[in-house]
Length: 288
Image (tube, rainbow, N blue to C red; front, side, top):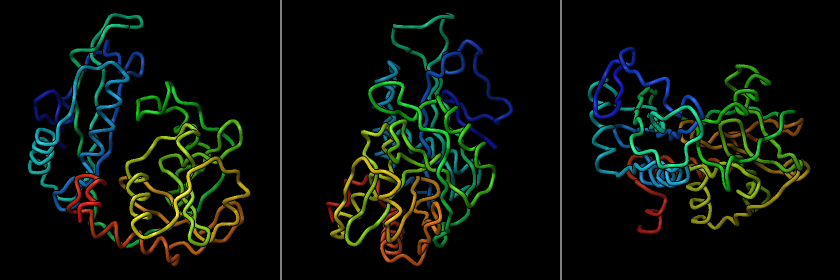
């Protein structure tokens, strides 16, 4: 597999960064995962906007732009003979002295990794389980998609490697938060519920897109602080992320759910498929 690193395309075995990179020493790094459908990077503008916002928080003086980033992606896809792929955009702060740095990072390491994915298919289901481990609080004012992933790794160890199970975090105060690698939603009547970013969750790109899709179809979206008892009354439940898209849940803490038979999840999935090869940003939903 060939990857991109700082302007070069190299075999992944040949790519190297310094052990003095502060992404390694202090976790000063960010990433985004983008799904490519038949060569099109879905919601790339939204991913880059969040990445750029995080770079500002980490005081890294680099910004991504669609034209340049898409050119790199298209070259990577061509070199690796891929048309459907997982893409990871990764920024690591760069070399610094040992010690905590206050000054801006002016020479970050920019890496882009591709991974082949199959053609996007039908809905696949998962079971959800409540994690014993609580969601850690964000490192700053709000959560960024950073290299600080130990909380997620420990949660994954708690549930094991089963691909059809997603662990659901609660906050220290007992409010539902998010999945290990996903945001969570549930349906009750005509209302679509999801935990608020006030809980300290990552404001997922797919989360934001699904919220706009739901509003487009006259669902009443409610973001708030919810306890377990609230979701156990749900008609449907699903989780979202950029690679797995919309994943319906069949059971959660003994509560049986319709999974992919749910009407709302089917409707949202159809809409997702309609846009996944053409939309640069969720803002494009309003331009039809």
